[in-house]
Amino acid sequence: MNKTILLTGASGGIGLNLIKPLSDAGYDLALHYHEKIEPLAEKLDEVKPKTKVACFKADLSVEADVITLFNGIKDFCGGVDIVINNAGISFSSMSWKMKLEDWMHTLNTNLTTAFLTTKHALPYMREHEWGRIINVSSVVAQTGVAGASAYAASKSALYGFTKSVAKEVANKNITINTLSYGYMDAGMIDTLTPEMRDYTLAQIPMKKFGPVENIASTLLLLASEESNYITGQNIPINGGLA
Image (cartoon, rainbow, N blue to C red; front, side, top):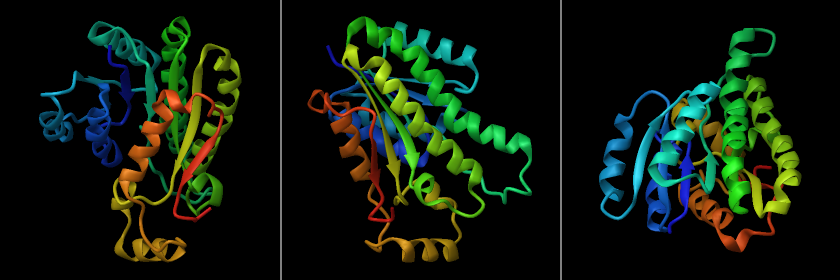
């Protein structure tokens, strides 16, 4: 029986580019989206003939929604073997100008969501004594960026969360790792102005934005049986930026 991946934030720029590689690798897919399903339509047409796939709408910062999501996945395929916590937002404001609600919204979206999906995935994984959880962080957590204190705080906190949970579940053959993206050629990079893109590119030692294919290949490694001794780690994909 195929293993099932829950990919959160599947309708975003990075998420959309991960669907086909995960499908090609033979996984069944539970694709999460928050508001708009339309961006997923074309990708679903590409993978449906060969992949068991379903889409689920949820606000992952609300536990009731997460419970409903996991109940839906249970009906769909039995349970989640692999969670890729890809959902997240970017937010920019100088710390002394930031509203508390914007700070909390960023932490809830980037950190609390990963806690809730992990919390509700682990009972099934513990019962079956196998599981993989991959939390998506950012190079910004290591380098810092002016105006990104809330984003950096949420993404760096993911690593502490990962380290602790790894120790809790290692005896059940469950691994949990953090994958820290640099500036990739899809996703949040599209929100930068041309001037900011040029500035960012100049800071990267490899002088190019990262190919999304690098993310997919690393995710597939971390999701595999061959990665069973890699846990509690932060794995950067950033072209030498940090």
